[in-house]
Image (cartoon, rainbow, N blue to C red; front, top):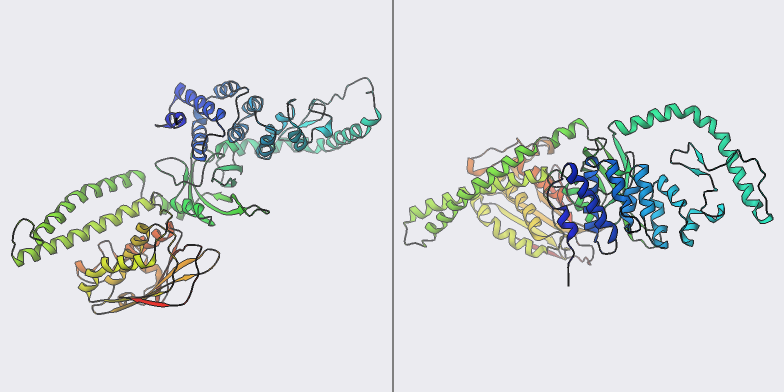
Length: 559
């Protein structure tokens, strides 16, 4: 079996400049055009994204020449829709070059630009299904005898008003001619009003394509690729995907938006980055809902809006710029290496692997190891927070059994609860559905929440928690935890303030502060499509649960 990876090979590396950019644009278009049925969705998305990113670097003349070279070989419907969103010349060349089956044209026509539909009407090789959709037979064929209205509805082509002879009327043509005359007369009655408004419309049109816009309406297909947009030029956004989180400087949503797409959940103010044309380039906030077929109920994509972030949102987004984030991650990496070495040598001494050691020496080694582990956990939290801020933290789908989670937490928190003399009682309503997340993400969220809560307890205090499944269209596992005594009476806003801490010895408080720890848990939960809320009496955490199970009533306690 041979695997054709030519497209992936072309897309490797950074965006080229100059002649190399025009060459790559031609290569990508050529590879996509000829293999519509053998390119998976990811390849189609990657190819369209690269064409869009190269758009500003490739002259119109080069784009037209590249499309004309595809004459008779353009068999990719997504590529055709993308090219028809370009300027008129590229659109016309794409329609001429297209070689689609009759049923494929039927699916593509609703997605074409007005210019694309007009150009398609001029083709004489269309099948009966396509002609029916375009209503060509009602005009007597695709011979351009019908008035062809442009996207701006400001001109009528091929209507010979100066014809000196009376056309020969046949009895069976009377209705068609009458219909045509009526449409022309209706157009002429409205033309004067349209001309009067043309100066204002043209001015608005020019401003519309020059200035930065503040809102975009959009629609995606079932793979998350944007196939329709209202607001910017279509070529500036069509082909961008909302299904994969953005990395580096490329376009795409944050991890929360990508996770919501995978689970077909509504999006609310997800971060979205667009690149390319100045009219859309920059950061956006995206809200959208999934839509489904009326007859089949099958998922068809998302419909939503994008808006520019307000000043407060920009301040949060820009709190850690790319350069500082990279420096922080590099520093964390450099500090982890000696810490891991310290932990390793401390374990060797404590376990007497290289020979006997005194009790005092082993006790000191254990203390050093605990402090190093505490520092390492703090560095990991900083690294996670930086990744969340960059949209690089993504919870993977999977299943995590509650019983496994409880056992892991009991082992992981044992030394902390013993050092604080805290009794942690967790009640689980049976059967609780599995978490709809992979185990590492679930354990990370719960471990950090419970560690922060235990540290906030007085010595000898008791914490009570319960876990149960809440049934609904989107079931969730609901975890409720009593408030530790040292944070009772403190508002949620204060608790989530990264500068907020609790009194105690240095070894008795979170390394980065309680506020930082709770905010980290909340952001981790959000990236997994969950929530963290704090009431006067309890702390509540919700995470997605598996969608199929039967719930009974039974109680199990863990300590």
